[in-house]
Length: 241
Image (cartoon, rainbow, N blue to C red; front, side, top):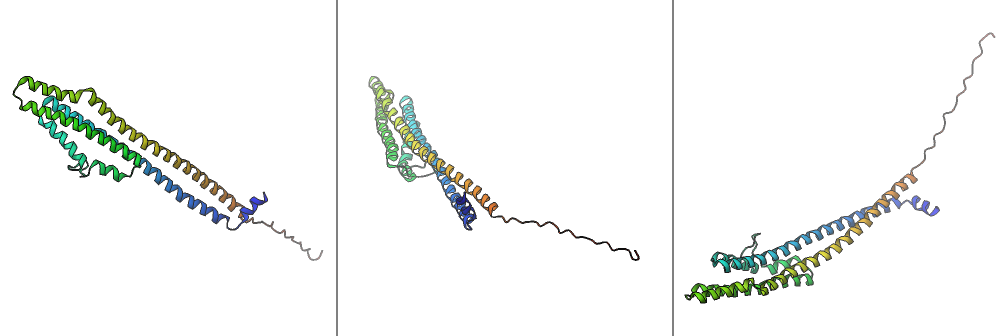
């Protein structure tokens, strides 16, 4: 108890407590800023994963539409997706940047970056299969023999709708999902640690405020009130008595 009284009576204790509160508040703001960046990075990771999956799906759909209809419109759309990935054509945001350069500029871990780039590589490899299917369509368009033409069309459709295509497509989607899971788990752990630190800092600030109030009350001077002095009045005796 004497030790606590010494702390409360120490002249610099209020200043120390104010300093602790001030510094803790600054650190707390930094922690919240860091947590905000972590959530922002998670949102960007989701956007990158969705962009990769969407472009892969677009390539698949456009290629299948082209093989089915032989309409050059779908082949042109397919080529546009490839150009956007390479940075040769502006993306939906109006940026002229390749997918690889975009994800590298975000600043993921090497292991995470390797996963999303692997997904792009798998998708590009699948695009080669799709281009091979296109070549059969081009041959079929030039072929005059009906039976040979139908055989070329069959080969193109087999490439686009066969088991191998589905297997390679699933590898792309699994790699994209693995990238998303890795980023999510990393940021989830960082965010949990940030919130734990924030809770400790808030507790420290509240404790310092409580001690500061007690300290100020302890140092508050006690004003002793003296009771008013009683005045005695003496009665004058009447003259002549």
